[in-house]
Length: 485
Image (cartoon, rainbow, N blue to C red; front, top):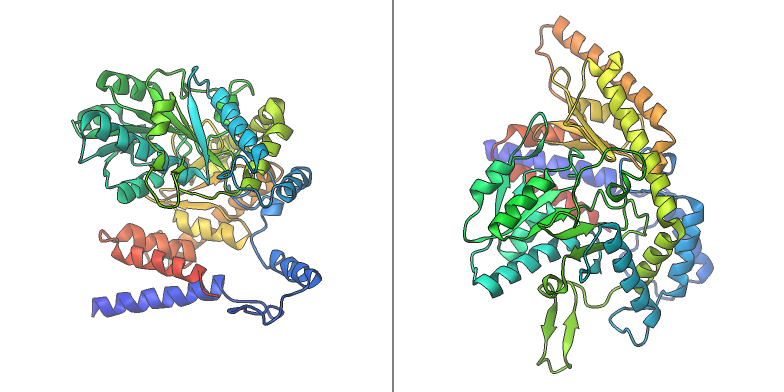
Protein backbone atom coordinates (compact mmCIF):
# COMPACT_ATOMS: atom_id res chain seq x y z
CA UNK A 1 0.00 0.00 0.00
CA UNK A 2 2.78 2.43 0.96
CA UNK A 3 4.71 1.45 -2.17
CA UNK A 4 1.67 2.16 -4.32
CA UNK A 5 1.23 5.58 -2.75
CA UNK A 6 4.90 6.40 -3.27
CA UNK A 7 4.75 5.31 -6.92
CA UNK A 8 1.69 7.52 -7.43
CA UNK A 9 3.50 10.50 -5.88
CA UNK A 10 6.48 9.93 -8.17
CA UNK A 11 4.20 9.71 -11.23
CA UNK A 12 2.33 12.86 -10.22
CA UNK A 13 5.62 14.70 -9.64
CA UNK A 14 6.93 13.52 -13.01
CA UNK A 15 3.84 14.81 -14.79
CA UNK A 16 4.15 18.12 -12.97
CA UNK A 17 7.80 18.39 -14.02
CA UNK A 18 6.89 17.63 -17.61
CA UNK A 19 4.16 20.26 -17.66
CA UNK A 20 6.57 22.80 -16.21
CA UNK A 21 9.69 22.07 -18.26
CA UNK A 22 8.60 20.40 -21.48
CA UNK A 23 5.39 22.21 -22.41
CA UNK A 24 5.57 24.29 -25.59
CA UNK A 25 3.98 27.65 -26.20
CA UNK A 26 1.12 28.14 -28.68
CA UNK A 27 3.45 29.35 -31.46
CA UNK A 28 6.00 26.55 -31.10
CA UNK A 29 6.27 23.28 -32.99
CA UNK A 30 7.68 20.02 -31.71
CA UNK A 31 10.30 18.44 -34.02
CA UNK A 32 11.13 14.75 -33.59
CA UNK A 33 12.50 13.96 -37.04
CA UNK A 34 14.58 15.75 -39.65
CA UNK A 35 12.72 18.09 -41.99
CA UNK A 36 12.27 16.56 -45.47
CA UNK A 37 14.17 19.50 -46.96
CA UNK A 38 16.78 21.69 -45.35
CA UNK A 39 15.64 25.01 -43.90
CA UNK A 40 16.83 28.35 -45.18
CA UNK A 41 19.16 30.43 -43.03
CA UNK A 42 16.36 32.95 -42.56
CA UNK A 43 13.94 30.33 -41.23
CA UNK A 44 16.56 28.90 -38.85
CA UNK A 45 17.31 32.38 -37.48
CA UNK A 46 13.62 32.98 -36.90
CA UNK A 47 13.20 29.69 -35.05
CA UNK A 48 16.32 30.34 -32.98
CA UNK A 49 14.98 33.76 -32.02
CA UNK A 50 11.75 32.14 -30.89
CA UNK A 51 13.65 29.59 -28.80
CA UNK A 52 15.78 32.27 -27.16
CA UNK A 53 12.64 34.14 -26.16
CA UNK A 54 10.88 31.20 -24.46
CA UNK A 55 9.55 32.10 -21.02
CA UNK A 56 12.36 31.78 -18.48
CA UNK A 57 13.65 33.13 -15.19
CA UNK A 58 15.14 36.51 -16.03
CA UNK A 59 18.87 36.07 -15.60
CA UNK A 60 19.23 39.20 -17.75
CA UNK A 61 17.64 41.17 -14.91
CA UNK A 62 19.86 39.58 -12.24
CA UNK A 63 17.16 37.30 -10.85
CA UNK A 64 19.19 34.06 -10.99
CA UNK A 65 21.70 32.85 -8.41
CA UNK A 66 24.89 31.80 -10.22
CA UNK A 67 24.31 30.35 -13.71
CA UNK A 68 25.26 33.47 -15.72
CA UNK A 69 28.25 35.29 -14.26
CA UNK A 70 28.73 38.21 -16.67
CA UNK A 71 26.36 38.28 -19.64
CA UNK A 72 26.99 41.86 -20.78
CA UNK A 73 26.82 42.69 -24.48
CA UNK A 74 30.41 43.83 -25.03
CA UNK A 75 31.87 40.55 -23.77
CA UNK A 76 29.19 38.48 -25.51
CA UNK A 77 30.11 40.14 -28.81
CA UNK A 78 33.80 39.31 -28.28
CA UNK A 79 32.94 35.68 -27.51
CA UNK A 80 30.62 35.42 -30.51
CA UNK A 81 33.38 36.72 -32.78
CA UNK A 82 35.79 34.15 -31.34
CA UNK A 83 33.25 31.38 -31.99
CA UNK A 84 32.88 32.50 -35.59
CA UNK A 85 36.62 32.45 -36.24
CA UNK A 86 37.20 29.01 -34.69
CA UNK A 87 33.88 27.19 -35.24
CA UNK A 88 35.42 24.16 -36.99
CA UNK A 89 38.57 23.98 -34.89
CA UNK A 90 39.48 20.97 -32.77
CA UNK A 91 42.56 20.85 -30.52
CA UNK A 92 42.98 17.14 -31.26
CA UNK A 93 44.58 18.42 -34.49
CA UNK A 94 47.19 20.93 -33.27
CA UNK A 95 48.92 21.04 -36.66
CA UNK A 96 45.63 21.96 -38.37
CA UNK A 97 44.60 24.49 -35.71
CA UNK A 98 47.85 25.87 -34.23
CA UNK A 99 46.11 28.99 -32.94
CA UNK A 100 43.84 26.91 -30.70
CA UNK A 101 46.81 24.99 -29.33
CA UNK A 102 48.52 28.30 -28.50
CA UNK A 103 45.43 29.76 -26.82
CA UNK A 104 44.78 26.63 -24.74
CA UNK A 105 48.37 26.54 -23.48
CA UNK A 106 48.18 30.23 -22.60
CA UNK A 107 44.88 29.84 -20.74
CA UNK A 108 46.48 27.15 -18.58
CA UNK A 109 49.63 29.24 -18.04
CA UNK A 110 47.66 32.32 -17.00
CA UNK A 111 45.51 30.40 -14.52
CA UNK A 112 48.60 28.68 -13.07
CA UNK A 113 50.12 32.11 -12.54
CA UNK A 114 46.98 33.33 -10.73
CA UNK A 115 47.28 30.44 -8.28
CA UNK A 116 51.00 31.04 -7.63
CA UNK A 117 52.11 27.76 -9.17
CA UNK A 118 55.79 26.86 -8.84
CA UNK A 119 58.16 26.37 -11.76
CA UNK A 120 57.35 23.09 -13.49
CA UNK A 121 53.64 23.21 -12.65
CA UNK A 122 51.22 21.98 -15.31
CA UNK A 123 47.54 21.78 -16.18
CA UNK A 124 44.87 21.14 -18.79
CA UNK A 125 41.60 22.69 -19.83
CA UNK A 126 38.39 20.69 -19.40
CA UNK A 127 34.69 20.97 -20.21
CA UNK A 128 33.73 22.16 -16.72
CA UNK A 129 34.27 21.80 -13.01
CA UNK A 130 32.99 18.23 -12.88
CA UNK A 131 35.52 17.02 -15.45
CA UNK A 132 38.29 18.94 -13.69
CA UNK A 133 37.42 17.20 -10.43
CA UNK A 134 37.13 13.81 -12.14
CA UNK A 135 40.57 14.24 -13.66
CA UNK A 136 42.17 15.22 -10.34
CA UNK A 137 40.67 12.13 -8.69
CA UNK A 138 41.79 9.90 -11.57
CA UNK A 139 45.31 11.30 -11.34
CA UNK A 140 45.44 10.59 -7.61
CA UNK A 141 44.10 7.06 -8.10
CA UNK A 142 46.63 6.27 -10.84
CA UNK A 143 49.48 7.79 -8.83
CA UNK A 144 48.61 5.62 -5.83
CA UNK A 145 48.34 2.49 -8.00
CA UNK A 146 51.61 2.99 -9.85
CA UNK A 147 53.68 4.30 -6.95
CA UNK A 148 52.23 2.40 -3.97
CA UNK A 149 50.27 -0.49 -5.49
CA UNK A 150 46.94 0.69 -4.03
CA UNK A 151 44.11 -1.37 -5.56
CA UNK A 152 41.28 -0.39 -3.19
CA UNK A 153 41.55 3.41 -3.28
CA UNK A 154 39.82 5.72 -0.80
CA UNK A 155 39.57 9.50 -0.58
CA UNK A 156 38.57 11.86 2.19
CA UNK A 157 36.43 14.90 1.56
CA UNK A 158 34.27 17.38 3.45
CA UNK A 159 30.55 16.59 3.39
CA UNK A 160 30.12 19.98 1.70
CA UNK A 161 32.60 19.23 -1.11
CA UNK A 162 31.13 19.31 -4.60
CA UNK A 163 29.17 16.19 -5.45
CA UNK A 164 31.43 15.65 -8.48
CA UNK A 165 33.83 13.98 -6.05
CA UNK A 166 31.12 11.43 -5.28
CA UNK A 167 30.62 10.98 -9.00
CA UNK A 168 34.36 10.34 -9.33
CA UNK A 169 34.09 7.73 -6.58
CA UNK A 170 31.33 5.97 -8.49
CA UNK A 171 33.03 6.24 -11.89
CA UNK A 172 36.52 5.24 -10.76
CA UNK A 173 35.65 2.84 -7.93
CA UNK A 174 37.10 5.02 -5.19
CA UNK A 175 35.61 4.63 -1.73
CA UNK A 176 34.42 7.94 -0.28
CA UNK A 177 34.84 9.03 3.35
CA UNK A 178 32.82 12.12 4.25
CA UNK A 179 33.96 14.42 7.04
CA UNK A 180 31.55 16.63 8.94
CA UNK A 181 31.66 20.42 8.67
CA UNK A 182 30.43 21.41 12.09
CA UNK A 183 28.77 24.66 13.13
CA UNK A 184 29.44 27.44 13.77
CA UNK A 185 32.34 27.53 11.27
CA UNK A 186 31.07 24.86 8.85
CA UNK A 187 34.66 24.10 7.81
CA UNK A 188 35.96 20.57 7.37
CA UNK A 189 36.94 19.02 10.70
CA UNK A 190 40.65 18.44 10.19
CA UNK A 191 41.09 16.14 13.20
CA UNK A 192 38.53 13.79 11.66
CA UNK A 193 40.37 13.93 8.34
CA UNK A 194 43.57 12.91 10.06
CA UNK A 195 41.89 10.00 11.85
CA UNK A 196 40.40 8.62 8.60
CA UNK A 197 43.73 8.27 6.78
CA UNK A 198 44.88 4.71 6.12
CA UNK A 199 47.10 2.84 3.68
CA UNK A 200 44.44 2.99 0.95
CA UNK A 201 43.97 6.76 1.12
CA UNK A 202 44.84 8.32 -2.22
CA UNK A 203 43.56 11.90 -1.86
CA UNK A 204 42.47 14.58 0.62
CA UNK A 205 40.06 17.30 -0.54
CA UNK A 206 39.25 20.84 0.55
CA UNK A 207 37.08 23.59 -0.95
CA UNK A 208 37.86 27.26 -1.53
CA UNK A 209 34.99 27.89 -1.16
CA UNK A 210 32.39 25.12 -1.08
CA UNK A 211 29.22 25.40 -3.17
CA UNK A 212 26.53 25.02 -0.46
CA UNK A 213 27.65 27.62 2.08
CA UNK A 214 30.47 29.55 0.41
CA UNK A 215 32.91 28.62 3.19
CA UNK A 216 36.65 28.20 2.60
CA UNK A 217 37.92 25.07 4.35
CA UNK A 218 41.04 25.09 6.53
CA UNK A 219 43.36 24.47 3.59
CA UNK A 220 46.42 25.31 5.70
CA UNK A 221 45.51 22.56 8.17
CA UNK A 222 44.80 20.11 5.35
CA UNK A 223 48.16 20.99 3.79
CA UNK A 224 49.97 20.04 7.00
CA UNK A 225 48.09 16.73 7.12
CA UNK A 226 48.90 16.00 3.47
CA UNK A 227 52.61 16.66 3.96
CA UNK A 228 52.80 14.63 7.15
CA UNK A 229 51.15 11.65 5.45
CA UNK A 230 52.74 12.15 2.02
CA UNK A 231 49.35 12.35 0.32
CA UNK A 232 48.01 14.53 -2.50
CA UNK A 233 45.73 17.42 -1.51
CA UNK A 234 43.23 18.75 -4.03
CA UNK A 235 41.68 22.18 -3.57
CA UNK A 236 38.40 22.67 -5.39
CA UNK A 237 38.34 26.31 -6.44
CA UNK A 238 35.80 25.90 -9.24
CA UNK A 239 33.38 28.33 -7.61
CA UNK A 240 36.05 30.62 -6.16
CA UNK A 241 37.74 30.66 -9.59
CA UNK A 242 38.80 34.22 -10.43
CA UNK A 243 37.53 35.76 -7.18
CA UNK A 244 39.54 34.04 -4.45
CA UNK A 245 42.94 34.80 -6.04
CA UNK A 246 42.04 38.51 -6.12
CA UNK A 247 40.36 38.95 -2.72
CA UNK A 248 43.38 40.66 -1.16
CA UNK A 249 44.01 42.91 -4.16
CA UNK A 250 40.34 43.92 -4.10
CA UNK A 251 40.70 44.91 -0.45
CA UNK A 252 38.98 41.94 1.19
CA UNK A 253 39.96 39.34 3.75
CA UNK A 254 41.40 36.14 2.32
CA UNK A 255 42.79 32.81 3.49
CA UNK A 256 45.66 30.65 2.26
CA UNK A 257 44.46 28.16 -0.33
CA UNK A 258 46.78 27.90 -3.36
CA UNK A 259 50.14 26.42 -4.39
CA UNK A 260 51.96 28.62 -1.86
CA UNK A 261 50.87 25.97 0.65
CA UNK A 262 53.38 23.15 0.12
CA UNK A 263 50.82 20.36 0.59
CA UNK A 264 48.52 21.52 -2.22
CA UNK A 265 49.17 19.27 -5.21
CA UNK A 266 46.21 20.08 -7.49
CA UNK A 267 43.54 22.76 -7.94
CA UNK A 268 40.36 22.87 -10.02
CA UNK A 269 39.32 26.32 -11.30
CA UNK A 270 36.35 27.12 -13.53
CA UNK A 271 37.16 29.75 -16.13
CA UNK A 272 33.46 29.74 -17.11
CA UNK A 273 32.29 31.07 -13.74
CA UNK A 274 33.96 34.23 -12.46
CA UNK A 275 36.50 34.03 -15.29
CA UNK A 276 33.45 34.94 -17.45
CA UNK A 277 34.39 32.48 -20.22
CA UNK A 278 31.64 30.75 -22.23
CA UNK A 279 30.09 27.69 -20.59
CA UNK A 280 32.11 24.54 -21.17
CA UNK A 281 35.45 25.86 -19.87
CA UNK A 282 37.44 24.89 -16.79
CA UNK A 283 40.99 23.99 -15.78
CA UNK A 284 42.69 21.46 -13.54
CA UNK A 285 46.14 22.44 -12.31
CA UNK A 286 48.97 20.31 -10.88
CA UNK A 287 52.08 21.09 -8.90
CA UNK A 288 54.17 19.22 -11.46
CA UNK A 289 53.81 17.60 -14.87
CA UNK A 290 54.16 14.06 -13.52
CA UNK A 291 50.91 14.47 -11.59
CA UNK A 292 49.24 15.69 -14.78
CA UNK A 293 50.51 12.70 -16.74
CA UNK A 294 48.55 10.34 -14.47
CA UNK A 295 45.30 11.63 -15.99
CA UNK A 296 46.47 11.08 -19.58
CA UNK A 297 45.13 8.25 -21.72
CA UNK A 298 47.51 6.69 -24.24
CA UNK A 299 46.77 3.74 -26.54
CA UNK A 300 50.00 2.76 -28.34
CA UNK A 301 48.72 -0.27 -30.27
CA UNK A 302 45.36 0.76 -31.76
CA UNK A 303 44.95 -0.12 -35.45
CA UNK A 304 43.91 3.48 -36.07
CA UNK A 305 47.32 4.68 -34.95
CA UNK A 306 48.85 5.83 -31.69
CA UNK A 307 46.12 7.63 -29.73
CA UNK A 308 46.60 10.02 -26.83
CA UNK A 309 44.25 12.43 -25.08
CA UNK A 310 44.81 14.64 -22.03
CA UNK A 311 41.34 14.20 -20.51
CA UNK A 312 38.01 12.42 -20.98
CA UNK A 313 37.11 13.88 -24.38
CA UNK A 314 38.87 13.15 -27.64
CA UNK A 315 37.59 15.83 -29.97
CA UNK A 316 36.95 19.14 -28.22
CA UNK A 317 35.45 22.43 -29.40
CA UNK A 318 38.26 24.84 -30.17
CA UNK A 319 35.68 27.62 -30.37
CA UNK A 320 35.12 27.36 -26.61
CA UNK A 321 38.86 27.60 -25.95
CA UNK A 322 39.02 30.66 -28.20
CA UNK A 323 36.08 32.20 -26.32
CA UNK A 324 37.81 31.55 -23.01
CA UNK A 325 41.11 33.05 -24.13
CA UNK A 326 39.36 36.10 -25.58
CA UNK A 327 37.39 36.62 -22.36
CA UNK A 328 40.49 36.47 -20.18
CA UNK A 329 42.45 38.82 -22.41
CA UNK A 330 39.51 41.25 -22.52
CA UNK A 331 39.14 41.39 -18.74
CA UNK A 332 42.79 41.41 -17.72
CA UNK A 333 43.89 41.46 -14.09
CA UNK A 334 42.45 44.95 -13.57
CA UNK A 335 39.03 43.83 -14.82
CA UNK A 336 38.97 40.76 -12.59
CA UNK A 337 39.98 42.78 -9.54
CA UNK A 338 37.21 45.28 -10.29
CA UNK A 339 34.65 42.49 -10.68
CA UNK A 340 35.85 40.86 -7.47
CA UNK A 341 35.39 44.13 -5.63
CA UNK A 342 31.84 44.55 -6.94
CA UNK A 343 30.70 40.95 -6.49
CA UNK A 344 32.21 40.34 -3.06
CA UNK A 345 31.06 43.79 -1.94
CA UNK A 346 27.48 42.94 -2.92
CA UNK A 347 27.76 39.60 -1.12
CA UNK A 348 28.91 41.32 2.05
CA UNK A 349 25.98 43.73 1.80
CA UNK A 350 23.57 40.80 1.65
CA UNK A 351 25.32 39.09 4.58
CA UNK A 352 25.27 42.31 6.62
CA UNK A 353 21.52 42.75 6.14
CA UNK A 354 20.85 39.11 6.98
CA UNK A 355 22.78 39.52 10.24
CA UNK A 356 21.70 43.01 11.28
CA UNK A 357 18.45 44.08 9.59
CA UNK A 358 15.59 43.48 12.10
CA UNK A 359 13.25 42.47 9.27
CA UNK A 360 15.60 39.61 8.35
CA UNK A 361 17.81 38.65 11.28
CA UNK A 362 14.85 37.86 13.54
CA UNK A 363 13.99 34.87 11.34
CA UNK A 364 17.12 34.05 9.33
CA UNK A 365 20.57 32.82 10.36
CA UNK A 366 23.68 33.07 8.16
CA UNK A 367 25.62 29.83 7.87
CA UNK A 368 29.27 30.26 8.83
CA UNK A 369 31.37 33.22 7.78
CA UNK A 370 31.49 33.43 3.97
CA UNK A 371 34.37 35.35 2.39
CA UNK A 372 33.62 35.15 -1.32
CA UNK A 373 30.42 35.29 -3.41
CA UNK A 374 28.00 32.86 -1.77
CA UNK A 375 25.95 33.56 1.36
CA UNK A 376 23.74 30.78 2.74
CA UNK A 377 21.06 31.14 5.38
CA UNK A 378 18.57 29.02 7.26
CA UNK A 379 15.71 29.56 9.70
CA UNK A 380 14.70 27.94 12.97
CA UNK A 381 11.33 29.75 12.99
CA UNK A 382 10.03 29.50 9.43
CA UNK A 383 10.10 26.82 6.76
CA UNK A 384 13.10 27.89 4.67
CA UNK A 385 11.74 26.04 1.63
CA UNK A 386 8.50 28.00 1.83
CA UNK A 387 10.66 31.13 1.73
CA UNK A 388 12.45 29.76 -1.34
CA UNK A 389 9.12 29.15 -3.05
CA UNK A 390 7.90 32.64 -2.08
CA UNK A 391 11.02 34.11 -3.69
CA UNK A 392 10.42 31.97 -6.77
CA UNK A 393 6.91 33.40 -7.01
CA UNK A 394 8.49 36.84 -7.09
CA UNK A 395 10.66 35.83 -10.04
CA UNK A 396 13.86 34.83 -8.24
CA UNK A 397 15.77 31.60 -8.85
CA UNK A 398 17.82 30.95 -5.70
CA UNK A 399 19.42 27.68 -4.59
CA UNK A 400 17.76 25.36 -2.07
CA UNK A 401 20.08 23.34 0.18
CA UNK A 402 19.71 20.42 2.57
CA UNK A 403 21.43 19.05 5.70
CA UNK A 404 20.76 21.58 7.13
CA UNK A 405 17.68 22.95 5.32
CA UNK A 406 18.81 26.27 3.88
CA UNK A 407 19.06 28.39 0.75
CA UNK A 408 21.82 30.47 -0.76
CA UNK A 409 22.49 33.18 -3.28
CA UNK A 410 25.60 33.09 -5.45
CA UNK A 411 26.22 36.70 -6.40
CA UNK A 412 27.11 37.46 -10.02
CA UNK A 413 27.61 40.68 -11.95
CA UNK A 414 23.93 40.72 -13.01
CA UNK A 415 22.88 40.35 -9.34
CA UNK A 416 25.13 43.21 -8.21
CA UNK A 417 22.78 45.69 -9.87
CA UNK A 418 19.66 44.37 -8.09
CA UNK A 419 20.86 43.57 -4.57
CA UNK A 420 18.48 46.09 -3.01
CA UNK A 421 15.50 44.53 -4.80
CA UNK A 422 16.64 41.06 -3.71
CA UNK A 423 16.74 42.18 -0.09
CA UNK A 424 13.41 43.98 -0.38
CA UNK A 425 11.69 40.94 -1.89
CA UNK A 426 13.24 38.70 0.75
CA UNK A 427 11.85 40.93 3.50
CA UNK A 428 8.42 40.76 1.90
CA UNK A 429 8.63 36.97 1.59
CA UNK A 430 9.58 36.72 5.26
CA UNK A 431 6.60 38.90 6.26
CA UNK A 432 4.27 36.73 4.19
CA UNK A 433 5.55 33.49 5.71
CA UNK A 434 5.46 34.99 9.19
CA UNK A 435 1.77 35.79 8.72
CA UNK A 436 1.10 32.23 7.56
CA UNK A 437 2.77 30.92 10.72
CA UNK A 438 0.55 33.18 12.85
CA UNK A 439 -2.52 31.84 11.06
CA UNK A 440 -1.40 28.27 11.69
CA UNK A 441 -0.86 29.01 15.36
CA UNK A 442 -4.23 30.76 15.68
CA UNK A 443 -6.02 27.78 14.13
CA UNK A 444 -4.30 25.36 16.49
CA UNK A 445 -2.05 23.79 13.86
CA UNK A 446 1.62 23.21 14.49
CA UNK A 447 4.03 25.89 13.38
CA UNK A 448 6.17 25.38 10.28
CA UNK A 449 3.21 23.61 8.71
CA UNK A 450 3.21 21.36 5.68
CA UNK A 451 4.87 23.11 2.78
CA UNK A 452 3.04 23.39 -0.52
CA UNK A 453 5.49 24.77 -3.09
CA UNK A 454 7.74 22.82 -5.46
CA UNK A 455 10.94 23.42 -3.52
CA UNK A 456 9.32 22.71 -0.17
CA UNK A 457 7.70 19.55 -1.46
CA UNK A 458 10.94 18.10 -2.89
CA UNK A 459 13.25 18.97 -0.01
CA UNK A 460 10.60 18.25 2.58
CA UNK A 461 10.44 14.70 1.24
CA UNK A 462 14.22 14.46 0.95
CA UNK A 463 14.76 15.57 4.51
CA UNK A 464 12.06 13.40 6.05
CA UNK A 465 13.04 10.07 4.49
CA UNK A 466 16.05 8.13 5.76
CA UNK A 467 15.73 5.96 2.65
CA UNK A 468 16.57 8.22 -0.30
CA UNK A 469 15.32 5.89 -3.04
CA UNK A 470 12.20 7.99 -3.58
CA UNK A 471 14.34 11.09 -3.98
CA UNK A 472 16.51 9.21 -6.48
CA UNK A 473 13.36 8.28 -8.43
CA UNK A 474 12.26 11.91 -8.50
CA UNK A 475 15.70 13.06 -9.65
CA UNK A 476 15.75 10.47 -12.42
CA UNK A 477 12.27 11.53 -13.49
CA UNK A 478 13.59 15.08 -13.72
CA UNK A 479 16.49 13.95 -15.92
CA UNK A 480 14.13 11.95 -18.14
CA UNK A 481 11.96 15.04 -18.56
CA UNK A 482 14.87 17.03 -19.94
CA UNK A 483 14.99 14.72 -22.97
CA UNK A 484 11.29 14.78 -23.87
CA UNK A 485 11.17 16.23 -27.38
